[in-house]
Amino acid sequence: MKADQAPLPRILVLASGSGTNLQALIEASRDRDFPGQICAVGCNRPNAFALERAAQAHLETFVVDHTKYESREEFDGALMAEIRRHNPDLVVLAGFMRILTTDFVRALRGQLLNIHPSLLPKYTGLNTHQRALDAGDHLHGVSVHFVTEELDGGPVIAQAEVAVAPDDTAESLAEKVQEKEHILYPIVVRWFCEGRIQLGSDYVLFDGELLKQPMRLPDN
Image (cartoon, rainbow, N blue to C red):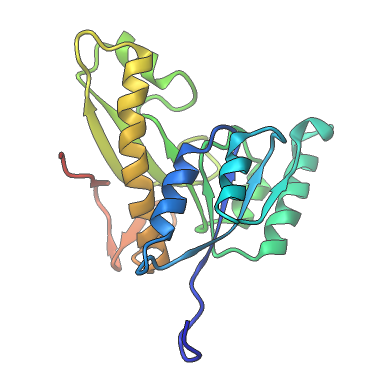
C-alpha cells in the first residue's frame, strides 16, 4: 500500500465449524483488487476446523469458548471485547452458530453480516433444506443480510437461487446451496468494503438508493 492510500477496511470473520465460507472469503481476499483485508478469525469452538483454515492463511485467530460462560450475556461480552481489540470495520458471520444478544447486535449495527441457507423471509432458523423439501418448494437458495435484533430477520442484501430436483435430499440440496454461498458472500463483502451498501432503519441502501428487492446472483 502506498503512503497516500487509505488502509483497506478490516474484516473480522466469526465461525463455528468447518469454515467453508471462511475459505471462500480468504480466497477472494487474495485477489489484488479486493477492497478489504481479513484481520482476524474468531470461533466459539476450540476444535473448529475454521481455525486451521485461518492458520494456513496466516491469519490471527482467537477462541471464545461459549461453554466457559454461564450466560449468553457473559459470552457476548467476552466476544465483543475480542472484536473490539481487532477494531474491524465489518464483522462477518460465517456459520457462527450462536444466537447473539440484542445489545451485541445493536453495538455492531450496520457492521454485521450473516449468510442464511434459505430465501428469506422463508425458513428462518435451522433445518432449512428439509423444510423446503417438506413444503414442496421448486426453488430454494441462500440469503446474505444485515444482522438486526430479529433472528434471521435483518434486511436482505442479496440472494441466490437453486432449483429443487424431484430426487433431492436435504444433503444434496445443502451441497447446491453451499456452492452458491461461496460465490455470493464474497461479492456482498466486496460491496460493503467498497461502500456500496449501508443499513438504513429497516432497509438496505445500494449505491445510495433504496434497495427494493434483494440483489440476485445471475444463473450460471
